[in-house]
Image (tube, rainbow, N blue to C red; front, side, top):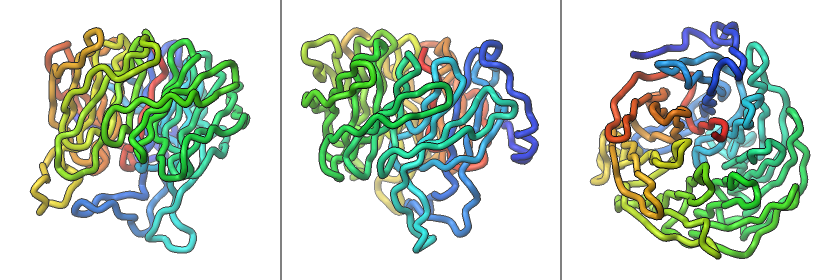
Length: 384
């Protein structure tokens, strides 16, 4: 079943159910500055504004309940959306913008948009500035601290959060501009954070004490270009995907033991070409990995496949193992789980849709699609 947007105005007229009644929101950031033309990420002529789509993930099937215009970017991992624990707001980063001097090119951006999810209809409540190439973003479970990975300058921005207001605390230097801080995640207790660095193949460990965040100088090494990551709801493990160099080789996902002193990689498995997105289920038992599978390559490439994949890995203690696999569209990005772990959403840029799957612990089954007004590039849900 397909759910289409008749118009942005019609969506904006829809009321939003309160978060208490709704039970779960998913927020998708949609990039209109990027289209894939025979394997090349291209800026279209006169693109319409980017959008943010609010989805009722507790509905069966999931349904769209609102939309807001706000800048975002497909550049960077699809963890460019963070939803507050109480689902009051969403924070959306924009890693790139159109070059004012050349509308055919993109340059780094630093914007964070604050989306009021409790407003009816949802609304842009404010903006803030992080660093160049603002990409992965995370809110701690206390709902009062925010980290942003700045891909184009080798830093992580730190903000305090009060209501809908972000206040700059400072920046953490991780490496030079080519180190590529990409995705960031807090441990459940808020005392630790991890940051992937796809430019120099590291995962950095940060310590957190109140609003004081420091680089511990401990770096974990998992594989070529660690990119998306997530930390389990128990805080015992993290899972990272290593996207490789795009040369057609099978790439990997790795498990970090966070209970080890110091944390370290303890398992790595193959998942396929270019694992772009990753999300752990709320109970921490499964990791959904979105795999390009060559769907973003030119059609004459020997590595091209006419579909992407979503791979579900079981997290059993300190081991990863493949449980299920499903075909998805092209150039697919992020994934999001329902709180019961029975519904999985996957974003597909080329199709401009979010594909839903049901999951019973053994098998993925298609469960409909949601059409959005832009290429869905990042997605987030509140921590459970």
